[in-house]
Image 1 (tube, rainbow, N blue to C red):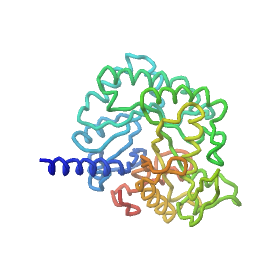
Image 2: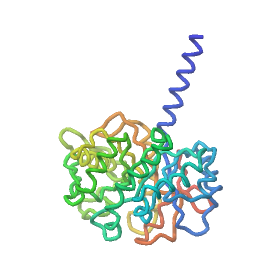
Image 3: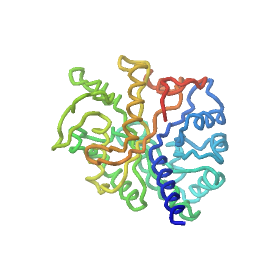
Image 4: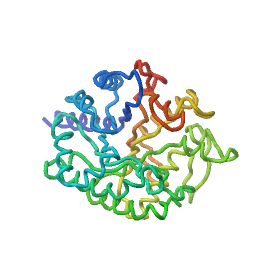
Length: 339
């Protein structure tokens, strides 16, 4: 009996360890000739991808996820935030999109994505994010799901005024009033901060003389710099730790950071090549699965979601926005990644 219990304990540890190392992939649908939602879910399963993020409650996707082992980040789109500031509407949203899909493994609800007081296109949503988060949380509490599904919002490093060196990470002055109560909410409810972290955008945003492609692609052989004794060999860790420093200044020391998006485009700009993108994705997966953490938070697995499953040729903005996929629309892999 003792031997059986020991073996069972070892099995549980293996399962937990394996689950902790899984890397998710974001599933966007702004593209032509994409596979059906059922085919996409089958593609996740065939490739051993056990975590997904979707950017709104698509019934066909949720139906296809029923009974699978895929854990889900479900977004409340920015355009829906104001409606969820009404508690009754939030309760209805949770009933329609969560309770009606009991066999779907919801992991997080992201209430809004990259809402930023300094961006014209999102400034108007700032006042809705926290009330909507509270109402969704209350609806989950009432349904008895608060311990299983965590409520957060997806931020990004554009909210930071300073990010170099990482220990100087701090939010913009006019972001503090918006983000501080969100951090308090996350701490109170044991929820993580979701953060979209893109070394690609940080790299191309630097003056040419300061661009360090190996630093951005995890291929630098030696540290790029030393920050108070902490050596940084890749930009991903530096951006992660800068975000952590910024939230820690506002009471978020114990709030985990989940990387809800990270990727590299394969076309549309000089650094956006298939070789660079493949290198970034392969090295990112290897890095976050090793549980080495970052210089500030060593020995930690970094839960990370690649952006994105497919190229999305209907996305607006820069041409690169259309080329972040890790699969082609015909389901062929772009880079032969191992998830």
